[in-house]
Length: 94
Image (cartoon, rainbow, N blue to C red; front, side, top):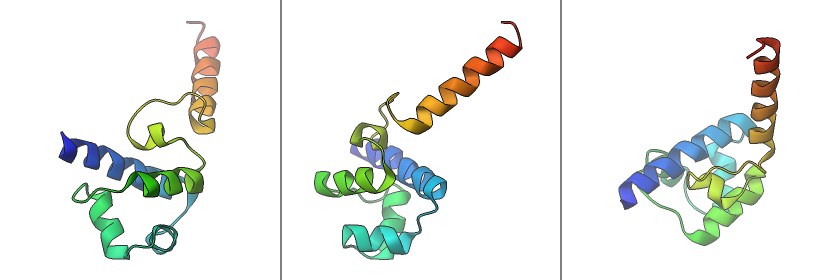
């Protein structure tokens, strides 16, 4: 179960990093860990403390729930996606 959670968190960190154009160097400085540790986290091979998850959520502008795989519709990215989907549905007359 923990390995699955680490993989989900790693995938989310990679996704948010790409979306926000934040590199491993900035992540490592923010968290006080090495860039190689960030790489292991992104691969799901290592985990993060709750304190570091909070730091990442602040850096990415998302909730901790978003990082651990829980849907967070209040997250601005998710809202934008929902608006786009709604527009597409209306345009397609579905």
